Length: 179
Image (cartoon, rainbow, N blue to C red; front, side):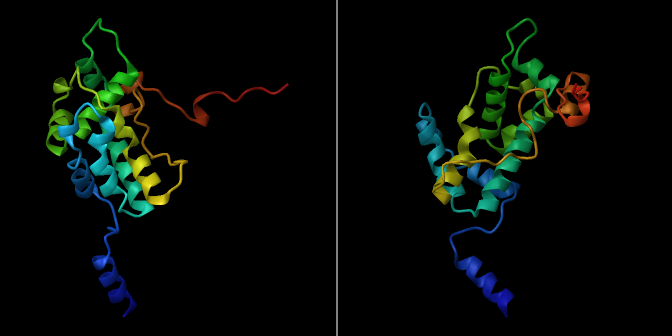
């Protein structure tokens, strides 16, 4: 009987129980591009929607976002982002990948399949802060100390960068010698 009561309580609550990629894209779809130029205003509806999820859902959103950004981290995307001989900004490349995600599922998967279409002149750094701001709104706490399982910084996707990938870990460097 308890399971049924929990089911009914969840359905009557305005707090969704879990996060998946469909819900992720639904939240991304709430970005208000009519407010372009004011990143906080663009993010506001998505932050509000995500803040209705439990903390585990907000962390799951951060995980999905990190994975999507990670999947766009590769040499073919970087080459399309900055033409040969042009200055390459690792931060700018990350913010361009954020813009791809922020433009929704259809654009994301098109560019994932066609790296040559990676934008050169679009950035949306503010997307990185969406889960943190939703978590702060949800919990009233300031310190967001969650680290998703995918490092989306430029150069960390081993599959995307091959031998050029940045590899971190305890076993990649020799242990320091203590005299």
